[in-house]
Image (cartoon, rainbow, N blue to C red; front, side, top):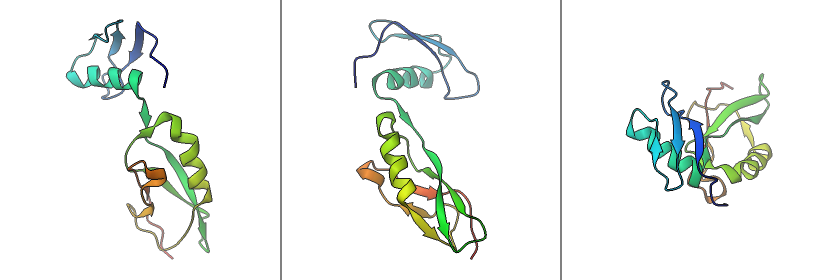
Length: 120
């Protein structure tokens, strides 16, 4: 990833407060109401991650797809690769909410888990 463009401004999304954060050239964070905001700003500028949500196709089910998400945030630059793997996945009911459908996707230490129970 390229070096972050500093100074930078962003809104913290760690909690509902939505602090307006400012990061200077030395990576000093201001505007945060708690330490989590400073950690969020530094991580967002140096190595942004996201939780991926999507759906997986179901075979032989009344509903065509089951909603899924990654069990942990993944590097932002890997989102399209993760989505390609999810698109290739097919599952069959029954499926329990929280069931792992893809273990350790792309070696990123995150599983793809169902977020809904589907009965057969």
